[in-house]
Image (cartoon, rainbow, N blue to C red; front, side, top):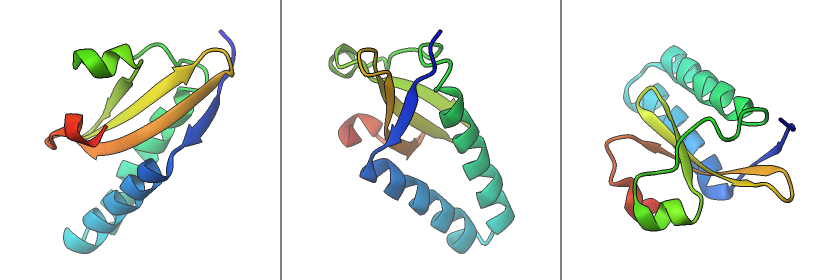
Length: 104
């Protein structure tokens, strides 16, 4: 399988910064914040070579758009794969208890 480039959207970048801030400042756990971000980053990096190993989302309309998800601890990474340009685009990274359908 070919290696794909990974792009992260501005909303996904903001999500990651919010995760770091919340865990390190609100929960006062900066080491935990770094571990969580490291796990999320590793999952995202793995999509470069294994972009189709994760399922489409269960929401029918979003699945028709090709949106896939990875669950990493308490967070869900949402992404789409462009086979023609060989790019994986990270759309959002959201807390798993959020009503994520409204954010995509």
